[in-house]
Length: 455
Image 1: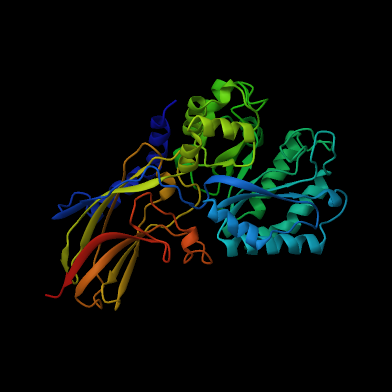
Image 2 (image 1 turned 180 degrees about the vertical axis):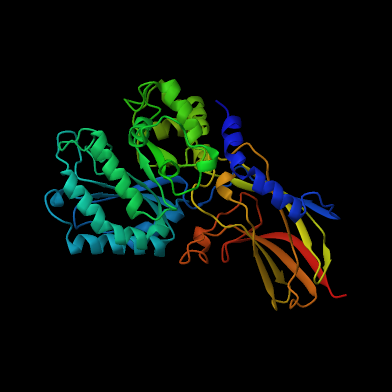
């Protein structure tokens, strides 16, 4: 399967709106200036909610996050961790205030360090080790709910967890993998997380079971608060066999489903063994077709070393999730106060996936002398910017009547919409163009000057 079918499905969602906006905002306009931008296909840098991650594991009430260790992730160009909490002490009792406070503080450490997490809870670290009864699980989730809601800004996505060995949804000692109990846990996740956040399930069949449907996410349902739009996927034995050690029962049908479903929900995981399936060509094709956003840097080390020896690991680092570049801009370099300033930008995505959480697109006109600034938030949704499609942004807006005539520099920013992160450059998307990124502001200097004139 190629990206084409996925692209057609995702762009259908916004087609009517995009056409109306384009007609209103100057898609058919003519421009007197244009500029193209250099690309850097080798540049490696951290970007939010994507890439290789490192796992940080906590046992009950111990192993809180260390700020210096978490800050060090960014020195490795890593912006994502898997935060794993084993709750063995609490299999038969509520979570202690000490445990809850540690989790609360961990989120603060993540925010201070400029990273986000994939979140998982579990009671068992191996097959045969017990998990917890369903009433205990749901009680724990109710206790966690306020903390998760307050800190969802640094949760990239959550994994269902809780059930069985390593929280991977199998080998439960309390029948948690039974359909009724799995639905209760997933639905509780959807209740305790804000509607902008997702929960990932270990196999596609789990989502089928929870929703009682094998139909993949349809364009008109994408990015809504419906369960089908908020349930993603993770594969913790990626490219290890034809079935990925039981991840799939009917690999062809289930991968076709995933290829469509993951256009608009997150996909990630880890490898688990070196086999012929782990070779670079197959791994690349799987990541492209299934829209992988993240993988574990710590496991499996032999697979990662294989990719390194084949010259593939650096490509994985660059292409996991999105990799956005600015291709060109068309614009009018001069405009009168009160008239429409019309711009058209073209971007590309050479990653494996689109961004999967909400993201703003902001243009900034800043006076060269620092006296004024105009910020315009575009209606475009980066979650629809799939690999393989041309991304064109059209906009038209009047410079504010209070703006002083003069020369203004044009900037583009892709900040996180969450209030505590909106001004944090670490949480803004960086484009893969050399010379544009300002690490101090999280903006891209497009090297374009607009002359605003008075009549």
